Image 1 (tube, rainbow, N blue to C red):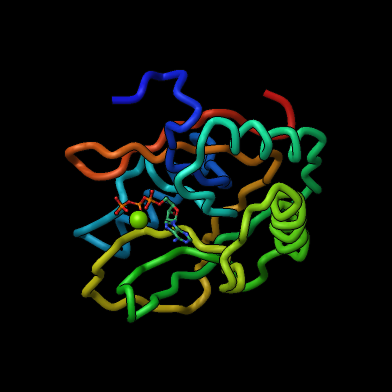
Image 2 (cartoon, rainbow, N blue to C red):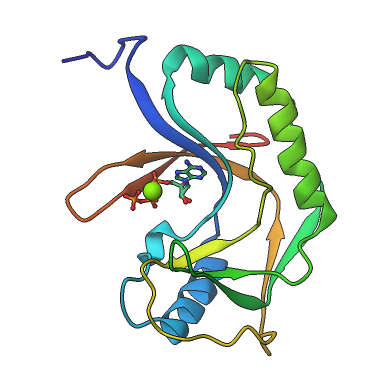
Length: 178
Ligand code: ATP
Ligand code: MG
């Protein structure tokens, strides 16, 4: 077994937009309206920016140094549509007008992390919040009358921890500040 200080010990990590209480409540409501089963639990709702995967504490220290002076451009994310990806059967919430600043933010994260040897995934970034997995219902992709308006001011580093009920997430820190 590895001790907590073991530099080889790995954590499963990702960078995300982490909703505040108010946004989380609204997103959870939309999730409940669209799916009655196999929903992501309310506490886990998030928008992944970069999936870091298994990360040692040494790697994390390098990533944190590379992100130290990160600034987040002012933006508002308007979550105004559901979407469905048939292959993984994922129901998601997203935006018909993802702000260019968000693409810029992800590109900037990739650039900084590449400098530390991290290899970003090749798939283009698609801003989405997974609401349900193995979804079997149907959903309208018409624009929502009452979108969730989410002012973005920071990003979060999240640890994904296995638990008997499925993955549990823990916010480790935020940028900028904190
Ligand atoms: P579980 O895997 O237990 O069903 P989960 O998918 O919520 O739960 P993780 O697999 O730890 O938990 O994933 C954390 C976040 O990173 C999720 O938003 C997930 O969609 C995303 N993610 C996971 N694996 C990858 C990957 N290989 N590439 C890109 N994003 C990923
Ligand atoms: Mg997963």
